[in-house]
Amino acid sequence: MTLTLDEFDYTLPERLIAQAPLPERSASRMLVVDGARLRDEHITDLPSHLSDKDLLVLNDTRVIHARLFGQKATGGQVEVLIERPVGEHEAIAQVRASKSPKPGMTLRLAEAFEVEVLGREGDFFHLRFPADRSVVDYAETYGALPLPPYIDRSAAEADETRYQTVFAQHPGSVAAPTAGLHFDDALLDRLRAQGVRTATVTLHVGAGTYQPVRVQNLAEHRMHRERYLIPPETVEAINATRARGGRVVAVGTTSLRALESAAADGTLRAGAAETELFITPGYAFHVVDALLTNFHLPKSTLLMLVSAFAGMAPIRAAYQHAVAQEYRFFSYGDAMFLARRAS
Figure 1 (cartoon, rainbow, N blue to C red):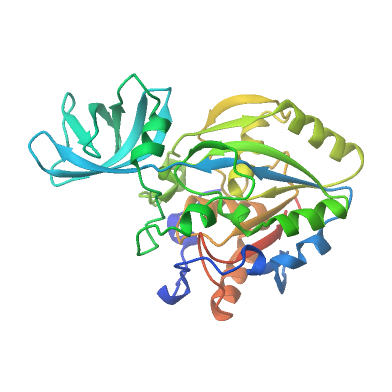
Figure 2 (spheres, rainbow, N blue to C red; figure 1 turned 45 degrees about the horizontal axis):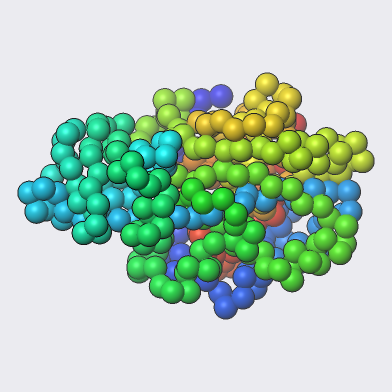
Protein backbone atom coordinates (compact mmCIF):
# COMPACT_ATOMS: atom_id res chain seq x y z
CA MET A 1 0.00 0.00 0.00
CA THR A 2 1.46 3.36 -1.07
CA LEU A 3 0.47 6.05 1.43
CA THR A 4 1.03 9.78 1.12
CA LEU A 5 1.19 12.48 3.76
CA ASP A 6 -1.78 14.41 2.37
CA GLU A 7 -4.08 11.45 3.08
CA PHE A 8 -3.71 12.26 6.80
CA ASP A 9 -4.54 15.95 6.71
CA TYR A 10 -7.60 17.70 8.12
CA THR A 11 -8.65 21.28 8.90
CA LEU A 12 -8.71 22.18 12.57
CA PRO A 13 -9.92 25.59 13.82
CA GLU A 14 -7.33 26.97 16.21
CA ARG A 15 -9.97 27.63 18.85
CA LEU A 16 -10.40 23.86 19.32
CA ILE A 17 -6.81 23.36 20.51
CA ALA A 18 -7.11 22.98 24.29
CA GLN A 19 -4.79 25.43 26.02
CA ALA A 20 -5.47 24.24 29.57
CA PRO A 21 -6.96 21.21 31.29
CA LEU A 22 -10.55 21.07 32.45
CA PRO A 23 -11.09 21.58 36.21
CA GLU A 24 -11.53 17.82 36.66
CA ARG A 25 -9.47 15.12 34.91
CA SER A 26 -12.44 12.88 34.16
CA ALA A 27 -14.69 15.67 32.85
CA SER A 28 -13.53 15.29 29.23
CA ARG A 29 -15.76 14.10 26.42
CA MET A 30 -15.13 10.76 24.73
CA LEU A 31 -16.02 9.98 21.13
CA VAL A 32 -16.69 6.24 20.78
CA VAL A 33 -15.68 4.93 17.35
CA ASP A 34 -16.74 1.41 16.40
CA GLY A 35 -16.39 1.06 12.66
CA ALA A 36 -18.89 3.46 11.06
CA ARG A 37 -20.72 4.03 14.35
CA LEU A 38 -19.96 7.19 16.35
CA ARG A 39 -21.30 8.01 19.81
CA ASP A 40 -20.75 11.16 21.88
CA GLU A 41 -20.02 10.18 25.47
CA HIS A 42 -17.76 11.17 28.37
CA ILE A 43 -14.68 9.64 29.99
CA THR A 44 -16.87 8.72 32.97
CA ASP A 45 -18.73 6.36 30.59
CA LEU A 46 -15.56 4.31 30.01
CA PRO A 47 -16.51 1.60 32.55
CA SER A 48 -19.59 0.77 30.47
CA HIS A 49 -17.28 -0.25 27.60
CA LEU A 50 -15.17 -2.63 29.72
CA SER A 51 -15.87 -5.93 31.44
CA ASP A 52 -14.27 -7.89 34.25
CA LYS A 53 -12.45 -9.94 31.61
CA ASP A 54 -10.61 -6.92 30.22
CA LEU A 55 -7.15 -5.54 30.98
CA LEU A 56 -6.34 -1.82 30.89
CA VAL A 57 -2.66 -1.11 30.09
CA LEU A 58 -1.29 2.19 31.42
CA ASN A 59 1.99 3.98 30.62
CA ASP A 60 3.53 4.89 33.98
CA THR A 61 6.25 7.22 32.67
CA ARG A 62 6.77 10.58 34.40
CA VAL A 63 7.46 13.85 32.57
CA ILE A 64 10.76 15.46 33.52
CA HIS A 65 11.61 19.17 33.58
CA ALA A 66 13.31 18.88 30.22
CA ARG A 67 13.45 22.55 29.12
CA LEU A 68 16.66 24.37 30.09
CA PHE A 69 17.82 27.91 29.30
CA GLY A 70 21.37 29.23 29.07
CA GLN A 71 24.11 30.79 26.98
CA LYS A 72 26.81 29.80 24.55
CA ALA A 73 30.39 30.71 25.39
CA THR A 74 29.96 33.68 23.02
CA GLY A 75 27.08 34.97 25.14
CA GLY A 76 24.27 34.05 22.78
CA GLN A 77 21.08 32.76 24.34
CA VAL A 78 20.13 29.09 23.95
CA GLU A 79 17.14 26.95 24.82
CA VAL A 80 17.68 23.22 25.26
CA LEU A 81 14.85 20.70 25.19
CA ILE A 82 15.99 17.21 26.11
CA GLU A 83 14.58 14.72 23.61
CA ARG A 84 15.77 11.64 25.48
CA PRO A 85 18.57 10.71 27.87
CA VAL A 86 21.28 8.43 26.47
CA GLY A 87 22.66 6.62 29.47
CA GLU A 88 23.25 8.51 32.70
CA HIS A 89 25.24 11.52 31.50
CA GLU A 90 24.36 12.18 27.85
CA ALA A 91 21.23 13.29 26.05
CA ILE A 92 19.81 13.91 22.61
CA ALA A 93 18.23 17.36 22.60
CA GLN A 94 16.78 20.15 20.55
CA VAL A 95 18.88 23.31 20.79
CA ARG A 96 17.44 26.66 19.79
CA ALA A 97 20.00 29.41 19.19
CA SER A 98 20.65 32.21 16.73
CA LYS A 99 23.43 30.02 15.29
CA SER A 100 23.62 26.27 15.75
CA PRO A 101 26.35 25.20 18.17
CA LYS A 102 29.28 23.21 16.77
CA PRO A 103 30.77 19.97 18.14
CA GLY A 104 33.21 20.76 20.95
CA MET A 105 31.35 23.89 22.08
CA THR A 106 30.05 24.19 25.64
CA LEU A 107 26.70 25.58 26.73
CA ARG A 108 26.22 26.99 30.21
CA LEU A 109 22.71 26.14 31.41
CA ALA A 110 20.66 27.67 34.23
CA GLU A 111 23.78 29.65 35.25
CA ALA A 112 24.77 26.48 37.10
CA PHE A 113 26.53 23.88 34.91
CA GLU A 114 27.98 23.29 31.47
CA VAL A 115 27.20 20.70 28.81
CA GLU A 116 29.41 19.81 25.85
CA VAL A 117 28.07 19.50 22.31
CA LEU A 118 29.30 16.14 20.99
CA GLY A 119 27.66 16.26 17.57
CA ARG A 120 24.41 16.15 15.60
CA GLU A 121 21.73 13.51 15.06
CA GLY A 122 19.54 14.93 12.31
CA ASP A 123 17.57 17.82 13.81
CA PHE A 124 18.88 17.04 17.28
CA PHE A 125 22.15 17.57 19.17
CA HIS A 126 24.11 15.06 21.23
CA LEU A 127 25.06 16.64 24.57
CA ARG A 128 27.29 15.46 27.44
CA PHE A 129 26.26 16.54 30.94
CA PRO A 130 28.61 16.68 33.95
CA ALA A 131 29.38 13.25 35.37
CA ASP A 132 28.53 14.01 39.00
CA ARG A 133 24.74 13.68 38.46
CA SER A 134 22.43 12.08 35.93
CA VAL A 135 20.77 13.96 33.08
CA VAL A 136 17.40 13.44 34.77
CA ASP A 137 18.71 14.86 38.07
CA TYR A 138 20.02 17.98 36.31
CA ALA A 139 16.72 18.43 34.49
CA GLU A 140 14.63 18.01 37.62
CA THR A 141 16.79 20.47 39.56
CA TYR A 142 17.28 23.22 36.97
CA GLY A 143 14.75 22.68 34.19
CA ALA A 144 11.18 23.72 33.45
CA LEU A 145 8.22 21.50 32.58
CA PRO A 146 7.92 21.36 28.77
CA LEU A 147 4.42 21.94 27.45
CA PRO A 148 3.69 20.99 23.82
CA PRO A 149 4.45 23.57 21.10
CA TYR A 150 0.75 24.06 20.29
CA ILE A 151 0.06 25.35 23.83
CA ASP A 152 0.83 29.04 23.57
CA ARG A 153 1.85 29.72 27.17
CA SER A 154 4.55 28.73 29.62
CA ALA A 155 3.95 26.01 32.17
CA ALA A 156 2.09 27.21 35.26
CA GLU A 157 2.02 25.74 38.76
CA ALA A 158 -1.14 23.76 37.97
CA ASP A 159 0.63 22.02 35.08
CA GLU A 160 3.09 20.45 37.52
CA THR A 161 0.33 18.04 38.53
CA ARG A 162 -2.11 18.18 35.60
CA TYR A 163 0.55 17.40 32.96
CA GLN A 164 1.36 14.20 34.85
CA THR A 165 -0.83 11.12 35.14
CA VAL A 166 -1.94 10.12 38.62
CA PHE A 167 -0.09 6.81 38.10
CA ALA A 168 3.22 8.32 36.88
CA GLN A 169 6.19 6.48 38.41
CA HIS A 170 9.33 6.42 36.28
CA PRO A 171 10.88 9.75 35.16
CA GLY A 172 12.09 10.04 31.58
CA SER A 173 9.43 11.54 29.29
CA VAL A 174 9.48 15.03 27.83
CA ALA A 175 5.83 14.83 26.80
CA ALA A 176 2.94 13.35 28.74
CA PRO A 177 1.15 10.15 27.71
CA THR A 178 -1.94 12.29 27.33
CA ALA A 179 -4.71 9.67 27.21
CA GLY A 180 -3.70 8.81 30.77
CA LEU A 181 -4.36 12.38 31.92
CA HIS A 182 -8.12 11.67 31.90
CA PHE A 183 -7.88 9.22 34.80
CA ASP A 184 -8.36 10.29 38.39
CA ASP A 185 -8.35 8.03 41.43
CA ALA A 186 -12.16 7.88 41.50
CA LEU A 187 -12.38 6.58 37.91
CA LEU A 188 -9.63 4.01 38.53
CA ASP A 189 -11.43 2.88 41.69
CA ARG A 190 -14.70 2.44 39.72
CA LEU A 191 -12.94 0.35 37.10
CA ARG A 192 -11.26 -1.87 39.67
CA ALA A 193 -14.49 -2.30 41.62
CA GLN A 194 -16.07 -3.46 38.37
CA GLY A 195 -13.35 -6.11 38.07
CA VAL A 196 -11.33 -4.44 35.30
CA ARG A 197 -7.67 -5.29 35.80
CA THR A 198 -4.77 -2.91 35.13
CA ALA A 199 -1.15 -3.43 34.11
CA THR A 200 1.65 -1.02 33.25
CA VAL A 201 4.31 -0.45 30.66
CA THR A 202 6.87 2.34 30.60
CA LEU A 203 7.54 4.23 27.38
CA HIS A 204 9.47 7.48 27.72
CA VAL A 205 7.94 9.90 25.22
CA GLY A 206 10.51 11.96 23.33
CA ALA A 207 10.25 15.46 21.88
CA GLY A 208 10.50 13.78 18.50
CA THR A 209 6.79 13.05 18.84
CA TYR A 210 6.21 16.67 17.72
CA GLN A 211 8.56 16.52 14.74
CA PRO A 212 6.70 16.96 11.45
CA VAL A 213 6.71 14.31 8.74
CA ARG A 214 8.67 15.91 5.90
CA VAL A 215 8.16 13.38 3.10
CA GLN A 216 5.10 12.79 0.92
CA ASN A 217 5.80 9.09 0.49
CA LEU A 218 5.41 7.66 3.99
CA ALA A 219 7.63 4.70 3.14
CA GLU A 220 10.54 7.18 3.25
CA HIS A 221 9.80 8.44 6.79
CA ARG A 222 12.11 7.47 9.66
CA MET A 223 10.61 7.41 13.14
CA HIS A 224 12.33 8.86 16.19
CA ARG A 225 13.49 6.38 18.83
CA GLU A 226 11.83 5.91 22.20
CA ARG A 227 12.83 3.72 25.14
CA TYR A 228 10.31 1.30 26.65
CA LEU A 229 10.04 -1.42 29.28
CA ILE A 230 7.54 -4.30 29.44
CA PRO A 231 7.49 -5.86 32.94
CA PRO A 232 7.15 -9.67 33.18
CA GLU A 233 3.96 -9.28 35.22
CA THR A 234 2.38 -7.32 32.36
CA VAL A 235 3.11 -10.14 29.93
CA GLU A 236 1.56 -12.55 32.43
CA ALA A 237 -1.51 -10.32 32.80
CA ILE A 238 -1.97 -10.15 29.02
CA ASN A 239 -1.65 -13.91 28.66
CA ALA A 240 -4.23 -14.37 31.43
CA THR A 241 -6.55 -11.89 29.71
CA ARG A 242 -6.33 -13.88 26.48
CA ALA A 243 -7.03 -17.12 28.38
CA ARG A 244 -10.27 -15.76 29.88
CA GLY A 245 -11.45 -14.25 26.59
CA GLY A 246 -10.88 -10.63 27.56
CA ARG A 247 -9.54 -7.66 25.63
CA VAL A 248 -6.26 -5.78 25.98
CA VAL A 249 -7.17 -2.09 26.09
CA ALA A 250 -4.26 0.32 25.65
CA VAL A 251 -4.47 3.71 27.32
CA GLY A 252 -2.72 5.90 24.78
CA THR A 253 -0.69 5.37 21.65
CA THR A 254 2.44 5.13 23.80
CA SER A 255 1.15 2.03 25.58
CA LEU A 256 0.13 0.58 22.23
CA ARG A 257 3.53 1.25 20.61
CA ALA A 258 5.36 -0.34 23.54
CA LEU A 259 3.22 -3.48 23.42
CA GLU A 260 3.30 -3.85 19.65
CA SER A 261 7.06 -3.19 19.55
CA ALA A 262 7.64 -5.92 22.11
CA ALA A 263 5.53 -8.32 20.04
CA ALA A 264 6.90 -7.46 16.60
CA ASP A 265 7.46 -11.15 15.78
CA GLY A 266 4.03 -12.13 17.07
CA THR A 267 5.08 -13.12 20.60
CA LEU A 268 4.98 -10.57 23.43
CA ARG A 269 8.18 -10.57 25.47
CA ALA A 270 9.17 -8.75 28.64
CA GLY A 271 12.23 -6.52 28.74
CA ALA A 272 13.64 -3.11 27.82
CA ALA A 273 14.44 -1.89 24.33
CA GLU A 274 14.20 1.09 21.99
CA THR A 275 11.51 1.32 19.34
CA GLU A 276 11.31 3.05 15.99
CA LEU A 277 8.07 1.29 15.09
CA PHE A 278 6.10 3.29 12.51
CA ILE A 279 2.51 2.06 12.39
CA THR A 280 0.55 2.91 9.25
CA PRO A 281 -2.57 1.43 7.64
CA GLY A 282 -1.94 -2.18 6.71
CA TYR A 283 -0.08 -2.95 9.96
CA ALA A 284 -1.10 -6.24 11.61
CA PHE A 285 -1.68 -5.70 15.34
CA HIS A 286 -0.60 -8.51 17.64
CA VAL A 287 -1.62 -7.39 21.14
CA VAL A 288 -4.04 -4.46 21.46
CA ASP A 289 -7.81 -4.89 20.94
CA ALA A 290 -9.11 -1.43 21.90
CA LEU A 291 -7.51 1.98 22.38
CA LEU A 292 -8.25 5.11 24.40
CA THR A 293 -6.47 8.06 22.83
CA ASN A 294 -6.65 11.81 22.43
CA PHE A 295 -7.05 13.58 19.08
CA HIS A 296 -3.82 13.99 17.12
CA LEU A 297 -2.17 16.60 14.92
CA PRO A 298 -2.84 16.72 11.17
CA LYS A 299 -0.25 14.81 9.14
CA SER A 300 1.22 13.26 12.30
CA THR A 301 2.51 9.73 12.78
CA LEU A 302 -0.01 9.28 15.59
CA LEU A 303 -2.91 10.10 13.28
CA MET A 304 -1.50 7.43 10.96
CA LEU A 305 -1.36 4.98 13.88
CA VAL A 306 -5.01 5.44 14.86
CA SER A 307 -6.00 5.20 11.17
CA ALA A 308 -4.21 1.86 11.03
CA PHE A 309 -5.97 0.73 14.22
CA ALA A 310 -9.56 1.80 13.54
CA GLY A 311 -9.51 2.22 9.74
CA MET A 312 -8.84 5.26 7.58
CA ALA A 313 -12.48 5.96 6.70
CA PRO A 314 -13.77 5.69 10.30
CA ILE A 315 -11.02 7.99 11.57
CA ARG A 316 -11.71 10.58 8.85
CA ALA A 317 -15.40 10.51 9.76
CA ALA A 318 -14.61 10.69 13.47
CA TYR A 319 -12.37 13.73 13.09
CA GLN A 320 -14.91 15.52 10.91
CA HIS A 321 -17.53 14.80 13.56
CA ALA A 322 -15.26 15.95 16.39
CA VAL A 323 -14.55 19.26 14.66
CA ALA A 324 -18.24 19.82 13.91
CA GLN A 325 -19.16 19.03 17.53
CA GLU A 326 -16.31 21.22 18.83
CA TYR A 327 -14.41 18.61 20.77
CA ARG A 328 -11.23 19.86 22.44
CA PHE A 329 -8.07 18.70 20.67
CA PHE A 330 -4.56 17.50 21.59
CA SER A 331 -2.82 17.06 24.93
CA TYR A 332 -5.31 18.75 27.25
CA GLY A 333 -8.25 17.89 25.00
CA ASP A 334 -10.91 15.21 24.78
CA ALA A 335 -10.55 11.51 24.01
CA MET A 336 -11.64 8.78 21.61
CA PHE A 337 -12.37 5.15 22.41
CA LEU A 338 -11.49 3.02 19.38
CA ALA A 339 -12.33 -0.57 18.55
CA ARG A 340 -9.71 -2.30 16.41
CA ARG A 341 -10.75 -2.66 12.77
CA ALA A 342 -11.72 -6.10 11.61
CA SER A 343 -8.77 -7.75 9.89
